[in-house]
Length: 79
Image (cartoon, rainbow, N blue to C red; front, side):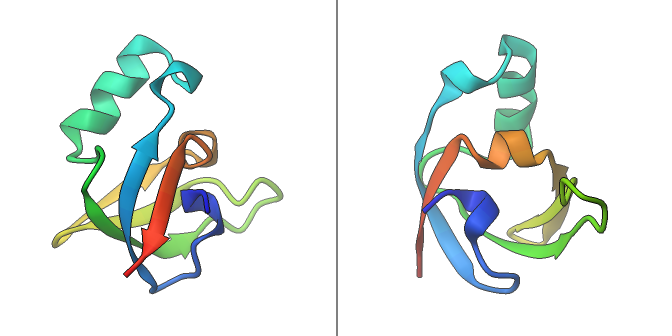
């Protein structure tokens, strides 16, 4: 499943990222936030507007905001 479909509070591991769906600068920022293949994370909150942007993602003890379009590029497996 893609990260945007992960239920709130469910832990998951990133198994694949389609970096071509992001601009180079955006992909660099996502990696700088610690998100790459093998990263364990969980969604803690979704935005309230129509696109449900942004997603609040817990990476370890750090909360990061992630665009839904970036979450669509990430395949995860629940753990």
